[in-house]
Length: 406
Image (cartoon, rainbow, N blue to C red):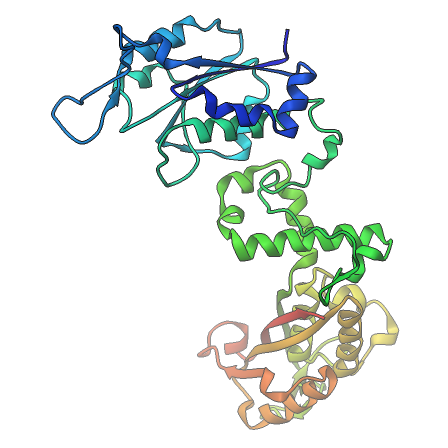
């Protein structure tokens, strides 16, 4: 007994001769992995002319397949315990790889090939599922049937020489497959990517994952937003790997310090004069602007906050210049393979006036980050005497940073 049975009801059984002589199907037939049975619908036709079609009620162009021959053909087929009947019709659900995987667990697929202008509506009662190859119309259901037989047979154990070849194929993980290359190394000035001949399997895997992701975004981004992709068992791993492939990361930072007597008021590396001679309290110089920028940079690549790297419990950071701390953070960011694209910050303070000092602050930050001053946004606002900033109990700052992969 064969492992898997295909029974096809068709008006054109000769259309399937080609499939019997194709590599995958031929091997499966020879190994007795599948059994392909063709049921000529004409043999179940009515009268001496074996009539299988008729004019539609209500008029209209073309002929419609009659229900009796199809029902008789379907009833003549021995059904296996795990069997499904598929009806090939342009009104059906578009075929997906997941459908082939799902059907590969059955014992039998019965395929009814439509023809002409269609079939009597009552034929639909025979089908477990109605299937289409896409949003277009063919002259018959034979080509879709061949596609299903081929695609499903490839999934059956023992059909392919290397079963691992199925793993990375397009649509298996809702991503398109990565590019392939073989010899020669250079062909008509087109060179094989260096990473593929490097021998570094970790880098090759990362490159292939990246190319799969990029190719899907470029050609079929609907697959990535598809709910099936989001729910697929592999999606979590793909999402984790795609995070490594992302070209941009965004981080948010926030800091607030209390206004007290006997401390300098330093913001953006500039010493300001508060009308009440107040300054910002903190272990370092308490520069809220620079602190929020550092937190946004670290947060963009999930490295935590400045407290993790410059803990207030360590004496060496007491009264530390925050611009110096920022230089250490940017070294870490670049070591991780990222550059700052731009920064936007909002300082919340009632007094003193911040705006006259913005350009000097931007210059200080620009020199540390080595980016153009035009890529640094600094705005100032009051809290309309609301909250700790409005009551002049403290000054806060919010920052957003955009990082780009080097």
